[in-house]
Length: 246
Image (cartoon, rainbow, N blue to C red; front, top):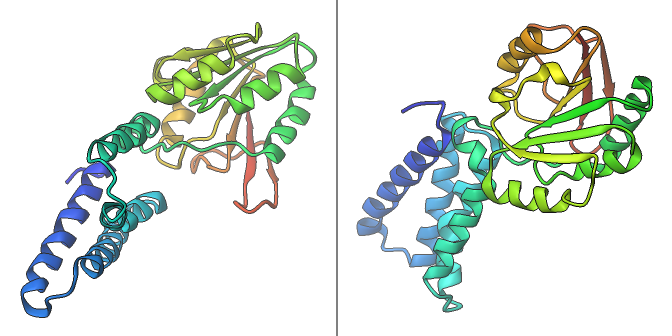
């Protein structure tokens, strides 16, 4: 098992829990709905033991029960394949890089706008893993004389964000890995990723970002780097904006 691929661990949890329920059936003879619920609970527990993150616990908990319940509504079998493909195309980055789709809240966007005022009316800004481009769209309207860029590799998410920013002249979405983007071109680099890639993000920032530029992370810290400033938002996610001045 490779911890770099949490989807494999999640699948492992599903298979082990299914085997346990299958073997238990011969002794207790519970019905299908109860078997599905039991399988989901066991899969979530195993995922917790394997130290998978919360979203994988939720997926493991509800995956099989949802299939069983939806069968009662006589949904076509192809709908499950479509649902799976949509989830895959949206959460593509979580399979390898362990970066799920996080959306920046309105309060955080307002705070980012206040921080960007320090850079003056003209600057370049990039969102690493720009998701649905809500942050870029908002900021590009707020600062019409500055340039905003996003990089995204989840196929469906990229398509939606690209279309969303298509008519914004100062906003561009690129289908590109965050690791292949040269950060030396930007005055501000923003990311809302996960704890996993942050150490490598810091190494990349030190190699590429120009002096005086800002690296801003939503919530996730860099253990080896003391930030220049940390601002807590006191929202339901207990978010904070962490700033490093290069």
